[in-house]
Image (cartoon, rainbow, N blue to C red; front, side, top):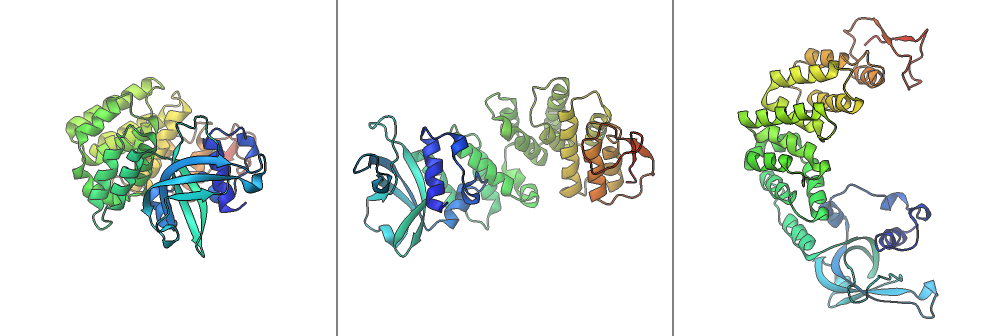
Length: 349
């Protein structure tokens, strides 16, 4: 499938086409990627914001003659191929429910020998365009401004803007966050974590950011959220809470993680989020704990049948060899990687 075909398939889905998800077979290019809008814009030759209009086929039903106009409102990335043009004709019939309320789109094009090839599009608003224009003005040599700008956008009422800002923040290195976290407001982050309006997918990131810029009272706040989460399934982003609390209170955080790791009565999801936090301190913030403390904390989950296979793999990957050659229960282990003998396997980790 061409890039044009990929984009139009996605566009039809977004516009409510009768084509079902099962009928769409997108190529690898148009799979749902996690690129930010800035990254997409950097790849494109031309980026246009406009309104769809005048879908038609002549004669009716002839897909070969299908066209839809894109009325250009703003050009975010220019190319000589559209100089002076206010309308771009797309070779596809893109209908929409209410002709009086046509959708507005951000459309990305390739340009080959003056021919436009639209390959990606997304519903857009003027707010999204302003957000992207602001992002394009950021100086990559000033990462503190980048961090502060996208963190402010997490509170946007636009889901598209908030999600893109989230991806931008995820792309920042831990070194940048550590160096410039002072530009963030810890009180604002704490308030977002208290608010039920804060999306679940952003809570882990916010909590970990609070660990970079918070104070003693914010550590107390995070501890309270952790305790609440251990009593119920309502709290989300537990791994972020654990990371944030541990960054502010390393010794107390280690004790908290050890308590969670050792409690086999906790739901698997809680112990798995504990493992995610441990991975962070193993791979990113290696200076927070001694490696031996990290290993001993992970090892507390070795006798828990629902998570032992994950722990063994973590320790195997890290080539941990100082543990004893004790045998660990593995009868319920799902993985066939570890052969069992009489319901037990030797984990020389």
